[in-house]
Length: 308
Image (cartoon, rainbow, N blue to C red):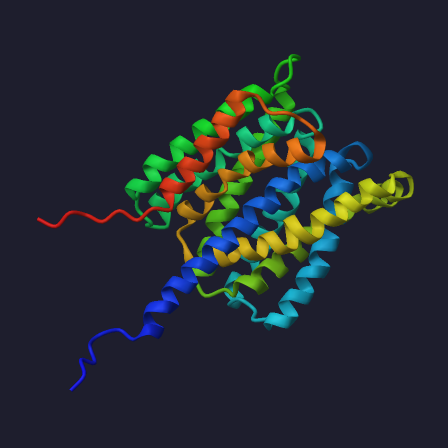
């Protein structure tokens, strides 16, 4: 008789395929989020932080509605509705406002450096409060990647020195990033559908941004078309597409591992800024980007314990 204890090809292939899909989704997320730094800089001179965030989220919510309907809307448990609303306002309203305002006085590299305090926060607090523990690859890789982010930020700072208000706003964005990642992971662990949750959160964030409607109307009337198109791009790709792929990865990985992946964002932002804006990176920025990639690679490794 054949040995029925052996796994079939299908059972072997499925985890591998899912692992590949997770890596692809993570890659899409970090590339699109990196491009957001370029988009915010492109639109920032003609849209104030609130108007930029509102138009971005209005476009993003419309696209997410299409994605959610095609996927099938499955509402979270009623007891979690208020948490979903808090998460949406935090991620899609407060975070966007803080980052948009910070980038009016900080260059993209410095803003990315401060915002990327968030993955380290997530590593610590997810280990403590979500009981994810502290895997060795994460503890080694996350600091390596953060060192790379520091090198990038140090070499992209302007000679005028740091702006305290901008730094505090970027720090607020980092805190919102970390807190919302942990809250989203909790909601996903309790059975919330990732696609529906992202759509509902985007709608909550958009509603919270409605006080900037008047500012948005004025900005659209006066802004150049290319600046408005940058905001539309931000709504479709770094918001609707990237947050959908982010939720897909977060549902299938730990919060610490998923957030550590975003350390690649500053490295990719350097390459995009070089290609699109003609901003040539320094050798130390290249080194920082390499450390970001190395650190993230380490966090994605699986180390086996030696058996005694």
